[in-house]
Image 1 (cartoon, rainbow, N blue to C red):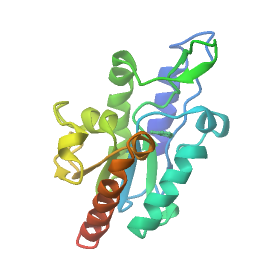
Image 2: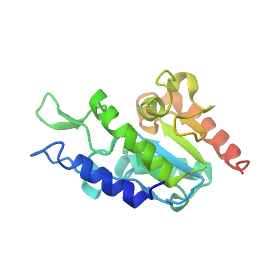
Image 3: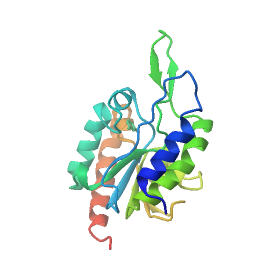
Image 4: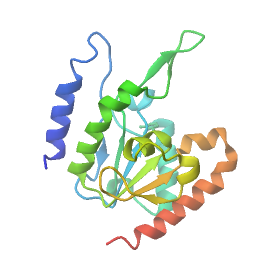
Length: 194
Ligand code: URA
């Protein structure tokens, strides 16, 4: 199994020529890269993540800190990454660049690299945030509305725990207690992992 730095080197070489003339830097994963208790997987980096070349900083970083506090974990003890490593953007009605959901092409380009990344990191458990990583790592039929708070088998051969994306709670406040309950159930389950 190639190490993480080898995977990232190969991935960077693969993506560099794909979008000539466009500024699409890769935001790679970070954290404990050798068999952490869990690997947290989001959708794609946003503006701040690209500026800092780090996943889950800015507003998403605040969400992550809340997750870590609830789950009694430290950021240094886990690995954090995204399915898609570039920021998917579009022009909004006022001409400003804004985030959009990753499209099919981006998902099919990046998912094989995510599987290699997971293989190199070898976490004990995967935690997906929202539908994008959940669908990338299962057969594509699972939906977070049905599967949140549950353990599923993943395509990576590592148990996967499905959570809502913390950003979705901003739009649907009713999900906040559900999300909290799910994170507490995850924290409880992590105590029992071998
Ligand atoms: N920032 C990330 O790195 N990932 C997300 O899914 C959202 C914001």
